[in-house]
Length: 506
Image 1 (tube, rainbow, N blue to C red):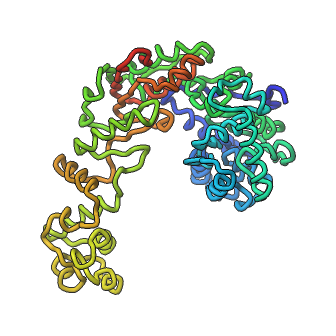
Image 2: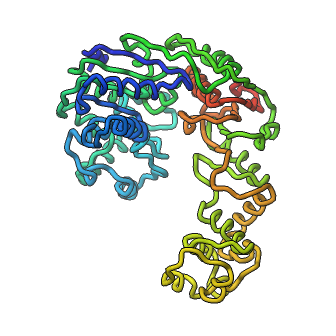
Image 3: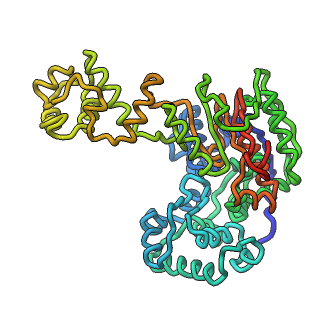
């Protein structure tokens, strides 16, 4: 196939950071519904399941619609899945990938099947990743191999991986996410659509662009929304050059509701290093903001008020930061996950309430009991509590009637089933204040934080060896990554300069 050219009139909405591009796109959906466009003739194709669901739910609420009225509010893979009439049993599952790895003696490591990441399939196995990447780029495997810098990959190993995966899928009669799009392009029906909306279009790969073209071929209007400056998935096959060259009527959202002028000016200097991009200007907010440079991460005070997003190019750079945060007794999340279970945090707080004379509800008590071993902290308690019908309990009646053996002791003595590492961390947290399940600090890679924001951002700019190589190969991609990182900040941006030569300096 050649370059994609929409048959419909295309409107391109360019949304710089914080300008509300998704909100604008949803407004356009509402406008189409308000002017009488049938909901089942509107398609909203999003990069993630979350975005598609948000668009559908908003339309349902405002126009009193049911889910079945909006059948085309989906990710591209979900769209293909339903159009082809597939079942879940026909799609590669994590168990399938495990079986494949065992059958062919391949270590896949962690598997991201693409279910909520725009179909970006990744494993820890370079061979399988490259096989899938070639398909997403619409390239023959040999062509992809010859035109990519795959120094650590043998051609024979790559070919074996491809053949092994295809053999496994054929034997199990299953399809992967990329298969679904390929099958749809070959034989899938094209529904009658008046308007097609494409969200986060800068992240589409060549194969997905062809699918969008097919879906849109009979539509009257196509809205394509994105920002080429935030295209940070080229490593996963995203075809940002196609988005940049896409013809159509352009609307640029100019007012950021997130970034201050200081942060906007700094991010502007970063993105202007990109050689191939759509020129665009946007404005920061009127609120005060700061951009501060530090030589070491320790120079950033994460206890300052407001939410914090701590970002680095790679995960290993976050490990040291995480260790320091734990030692200081600060509660945090990493990739939006607590480092300690919310159940344990809740049990600690509930135990403190009990020992100060407060009543505690039954679910909290069950959490408490789960961290106490038999004959040390609790006996026969679980059984008795299940038979009870009260909603609230106090310490005395738990001791008298429900098997609680240890009352009045500190939680770290009573909860003898909690490991020492977690105990030490929780003690450090307690010294600093109240335990909470909603910490203000989140650690993430820059890729993982895309779409997020915080009052304050700490951005580590040092590059790994792999990133250095990528910088030398295509500096545009790395500039976009740090541009995305810097523009997550609402008020304060703290930039930690590299500690060695050759690092990327924002």
